[in-house]
Length: 400
Ligand code: ADP
Image 1 (spheres, rainbow, N blue to C red):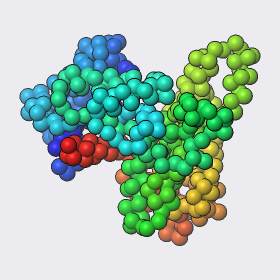
Image 2: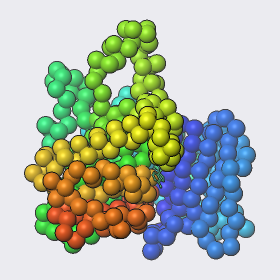
Image 3: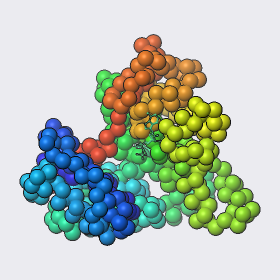
Image 4: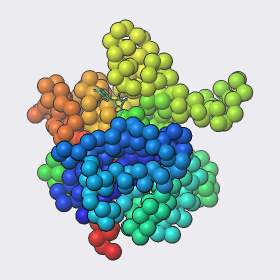
């Protein structure tokens, strides 16, 4: 069974074609600047096939983008399948499933309506995700599609973790609560971690998904009990450009002082804050690290702030779970940043965390980086959200 995985944004669309027999990635790529000047990238992972790098393709809407993907996949010279019939189903990454979706589901009218109903909760992403679904329906009529939600894994949180201490009616009437994101990644790496621990009867795992966007989750026996992101993906630890948790009074203060409207304020918190806002250098951790090495004090502060907040949340989750058996690092920074991992774990010795500096030199893969005498096992586990989406899609389609 071959599954096309789609992650549709407002002006971009990432895709992968995965052969589920052996879970082999056949091709992947990206459509960018949809609705603008259309750039198309295609990377076949089959011997002898040529890649296409950011070429101009007219993509006024997501439908032309999907068509470009299909054309490339079935291209007689450089395609990886002979016809569209070989693609059995499509799996979509959907940002917000509200409290309704506790797991992935087959795309049908009810599912589309429910995703639409979540637009107020995910105003930037859900409409784009729906455009991805509509485009596939148009270009591949009748092909089964599955929706996989970023929020679903976190729906096992207990009320005290997901409720905000504001008037209860906003929860009851308006669905204001913690939802959490990166759920597909947290689900994937926590499950892999349980495997690597030898499938114990009981496990308490803290997953640190640290990339451009970052979130932590606390997982007891494979189920999420808390996570750092909230109603939206702005909450938690500081990120590339997002502020993470702040005192809401800051908004009132700055809006009053500078006459910002809420849109301007949210733009500052979403796009101009985080390690970019603190360092003034970049949102990319590699650039900030380089600047810090050259003595840039704000770059140093940005990194220290990030490490401090991640470390603090690890401590908080150990307290929430009554202990911790394993910590997992994943995503861009978590998988590649050995320095970052070491800096985060510095000071966690009291919890029984002891990093082995040699083991910590790894990048990606699935690697133990804690010392043999560390009471808490620490792993680097490369995340694979697309594979998780493809697995869910396969399971749902096979059960039809
Ligand atoms: P996204 O959230 O967009 O999926 P990624 O998970 O790809 O992001 O993470 C991107 C981040 O990973 C960037 O800030 C980048 O600097 C960081 N990163 C990549 N390689 C390294 C590295 N060797 N050391 C530290 N950070 C790295």
